[in-house]
Image (cartoon, rainbow, N blue to C red):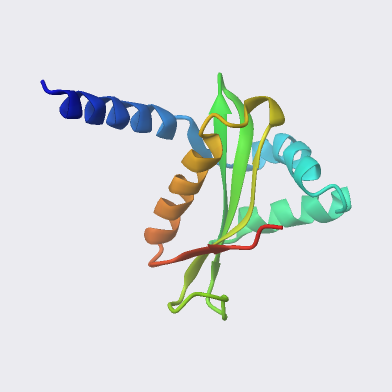
Amino acid sequence: MNRITELFSIFIQETQNTMQHIITAEPEHHNVWLEMATDLWPDYITADLESVYQEIMRSEKFEILLYQQNGSPIGFIYLGLRADYVEGSDSSPTGYVEGIYVNPDFRKKGIAKALYQAGETWAKQRGCSQMAQTFI
């Protein structure tokens, strides 16, 4: 096996291992998501974030993917499908990153990248050819 094949094999294995850590949020993840969301959006009222979570659970246009380590969620990506105008997009629907969060103790380890890639897959499966986000 040459070096390039070996490196590619390692990359594929790491990607598969990462994807095993990403799950779709379910109603029972409410409390852990709420804790992370409050950290990401500290100016929001907790009751409003609770309402957002319940709306996401009922909707097919929104999704939360969780990144787990040792069975505990340590990050999430909150995704949406937007059919209205999205700045910079020339197609519809457009996958939209509503928010992305990784626990500070686990940052700079590729978790946000893995979540974003999983979000891209989610959007592609729903007919999107583009992703967008607004980060401040």
